[in-house]
Length: 522
Image (tube, rainbow, N blue to C red):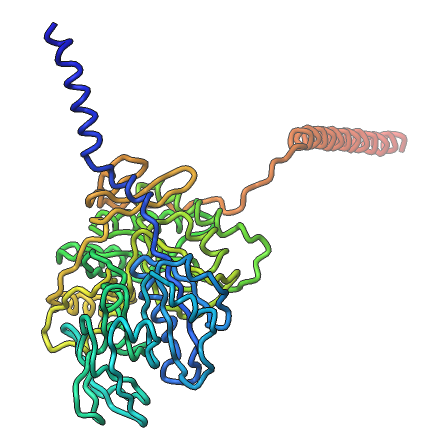
């Protein structure tokens, strides 16, 4: 009787708990959509100091997990602004014609965020931020300081300086010509203004501080150590030693490995997998680097998907859990590469473009749930005071160390890392998922998983035998017939030899008898 009375109460509690308790992280992650940002520019600024600043901004946006659509102002279509949550307007050339009237009209009714980079402020930006701008006419020498970073002797020309504003200021710009200090950037609510952005100097990193608040990103940034340039033909013994040294030093790291796209059953490929398994056991997180694009002329456009999937399945079958992909930024702006090469991953490490080789270029990028910016090892040192620990950047950042080619290079790398006072995070502490048709690998709360089962770490290295049949023999359908024929020929030859021997013996006897009878007659 008591149980019957308690049953409705228990059901009511279950209903309340199901409404109050949060959904699992995986369910929430599927519902989160990346921010849609439209980036418009007036000029690529080729041949000027501003060349490449659009690409630099695209890479920063990718590091914040933004899906970006990039086009010039003259390609803008009236009414399309309403499909985006935010707009970035880059003014690289003030001498170009005014902005399209269709865009100016849409801006007046646009309720999303607006960030302008360079040039005289647009009317909505001017009103919201209450900007007062002073612009120098000739060449100037600048100094920039933001957070713990500082750079002097930045040369520029015709830079607009913020002399009055509403909202928050970011960094300090010092002008040698003006002899005064102004903020590097300004932001208030959904609006922001950055007067100057150049690829390759501190202004590129300074823009990330403005972007983080403008995009309303709340997550803190982390630093990761990343080993790049690991190939199947690398010195695998040195790779094992590098992993052991980093493990003994207590430094978690990411190994960005080149995939094996064919002959996965060869001993060389198996030794490569065995080494990667050891690297994983030494607190190394494995990410798969995008394959090297040697040519954009490929007969079978789907070969990339099948080869990547085979390699990922080979890793999973060997007990290795890849966590993401590393690729140059242009890969995320190519339909072929994203659909056939990047589709398996929800985590990406964004490298700067080295050599752009599009197959099917697109205006819009592919966004990932987890992203990391990349900076070459030692690149931040000129902006820091000596023996100063790195404070986290606004976004997750991987410090890229090339895989050492000798033990002397390994020693130099280890000395640099041990002398660094920075805190390096473990990549697998975040959630990552890699999914193929047959396997799912990833990390949850610092634990590696393959198909939902935790991996048992094993740092023992197995010896891979070198014997292997590299060319498989084709099946011989007439093998049995040929074997019978061979036996028949052998019998015929033996019979022929026996007959020949018999005739030889008979002839010899007849010859002897002939001469024996002749002697008797005489």
